[in-house]
Amino acid sequence: MASSTADVLSSTTNNLESQPHEKSSLEQFRKLFIGGLTYSTTDEKLKEYCSTYGEIAECVIMRDREGRSRGFGFVSFKDRSMVDSFMQHRPHTLDGRKIESKRAMPRDEASKPEGQLTVKKMFVGGIKEDITEDDLRSHFQKFGNIIECNIMKDKDG
Image: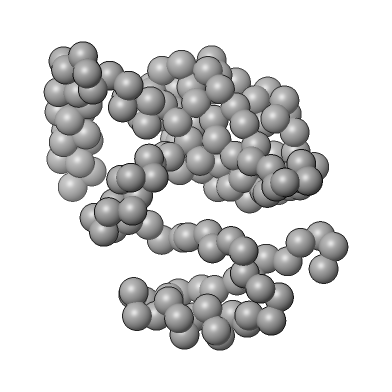
């Protein structure tokens, strides 16, 4: 099964490479979502860590309006083979915390029903303080089986 998936991915990406107007979409094969970062991890520290797996084209930790880390970011490598190397060496630990890495997906594709078929973990932001894990579970159970539900609290509360 894994080899047929790899063959399909290889075939798909080769077809994209042969179409000049599609080359910009190849960035999705070079870009990773990195979650579970400590709030003190800097862009530089993330870039330094990831650069051991290849040359970094872009590295950014997402921040709130006050400039505080939101605990996740994106890393784009110069070549998708570097992404493969990074993914093959999972799990990764940075600043004493196990981080999650997965291939980034463009928002337009992520919003399609078929775009999330393999997702096993999802982030829901902007949750009000009075919402419980049971509330979330109750709301999202109509979309599929929920194995685990955790509400992460800010370091302030």
